[in-house]
Length: 180
Length: 105
Image (cartoon, rainbow over all chains, first blue to last red; front, side, top):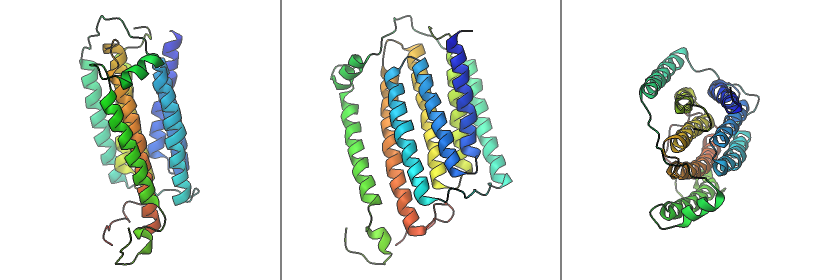
């Protein structure tokens, strides 16, 4: 057994266990910390697949950005010591049946399918190639999605500030409001 | 393949993660935990893209760029969702989905 396989087993065990814990734990801050473990293990998988740039993006953006954002909003909106009431057995049973059936169907299909790999040589993914592809207008270029995603990020940032801004119409609770 | 792991293992792992997220999405009542389940789902899809790209089309970079854009969309989605959640909390003083059932001013 090679070290790659050992690392894969480790990461996949961590991902499975902690993602189940994320959706079943009854304390909300623990759910966020388990989600952090899942995201870090996923970035380990990206390293295993030789996508170093994407693994770094995953670590900084997901594990560093989104989880911190989620933890901040948890601290703003919930009592940390408060426990969720467990969902009723009916809801749990039917959701479990739905997800297990879906997972079984997908896994059976995956195991049935014969994937055929190409014989072409693998491309080395280095930073220069990523930057050139992102900004090139050739057939292999991604300049249009790059521009669209930058506009989307700007719009999301402005929207988040506008929505979460204090003193907007949401806090006044009056039936009529004329300000923006 | 240099990693010595069949592609099926990656796909099965992503499937388990995806349906765990679906289970959480169906059972949870708190808005923030629902958001966490959505993040799980998006992550599992990213693993799929990268495994396909590395194993089946190693001479191209489509899967990598697609997961990069998925990560960017997930980030903006999380930012807007958390702004909305904070606003809902200000108005209703709860983020339980069953108590938030009116949109009219």
